[in-house]
Length: 517
Image 1 (cartoon, rainbow, N blue to C red):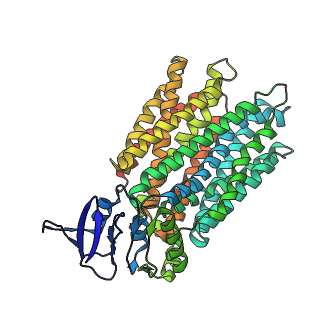
Image 2 (cartoon, helix red, strand yellow; image 1 turned 90 degrees about the horizontal axis):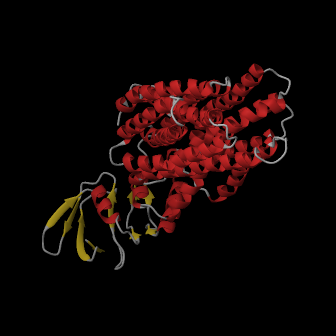
Image 3 (cartoon, rainbow, N blue to C red; image 1 turned 45 degrees about the horizontal axis):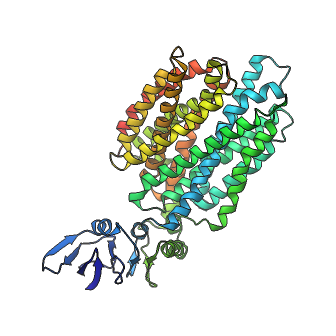
């Protein structure tokens, strides 16, 4: 028996459990939690003599609300139990910022293409025909997406073998270094090659998602991932639009594309300062037999979140030995095995549709409205509005994802985006209505895309999680190459892209409903 106080009532807690069930009791001004792995249950004796039995998870949820501090008395706990006990606190806010900033950098480098391609080909190819300029504009986008395809596969393996933090660090260095080198390009061919190298680095952004998702309690995972990805991605889009507006509207006849590339690379260079304070995933440490390091990360999180873990705490060793995990983890046969084959194929379809939908709208919007309106700055205004529209889409998705589930959220957001894109493809509509359609379409598609980043890591085992997420991202980058061709290879990109994006949004609805929960 251990006394605790909860919401003003003094309770007496009697625990019946095996060695992995943990009673967590608090001081006078603190709450207590009951958590465990294979718990038989906990019997609570109230002051009025009544008894109640609850599972560890229900006790955890009951006592988390209004948490001030937590004291844990334990011997052996699983990583999942400790992560859930950590709840949400200052440690997770910092981690959200550290991992989410990768998406701001990713957004700046991807949105860069929509502004750079129309400006750079006439400057670096002044004597070339319009067809040749359009083709090289397509190559600039296609090679970037090809680099992302390769990088997603590469960093998925690096993340599973060397750790999430190392994969994240290496990818950030690649993006920042080659992003700066792009500004020194003497011709279009060198620029295309360097943008391909930037793409390889961008393929490693999934390392940050995996790290974050493995260190956050399950009940916070959906909303926190969507908000971190969505909010900071949107910030990156807004930043890049403002940078483009500034650089490409400076007085004079000179196109300041080199300044534009330097300013676009600065976020990735700045991001490098966070890594000395970034932790590794405790789940990665566990599957690689680094139990002390995993415990160290969890104790650090506990100190920052004011959760008191006992000095003698030991982590429950995963059932699967490291040797077996290393043999199976990260291999394609694991993802295409009988258990995960259907889920993997459906996820590939969803990722493909999401990329062609989102980047189709992002790349086409500046071109579309520059053609529809004679105001030379109209594409910047509309792109800013469309980027701001991602905020309500992000908030809506974060609200729905834990209430109606991942599948239904995807279906709802894809449907709304498809309807809005249908109106966007009707170029005869008034400018204001087209702007509204662009705003709704982009916000909805981003919401569906963010939902995928929540769902995908949850369905794969730890040893293959980063590779599975990276492989989905890699398959989707084929869609990016298609988008580049649609957007940059001809002047009628807007009308063509509207039809293609709409059809793929419609196709997305079936796997959204069919994919396993």
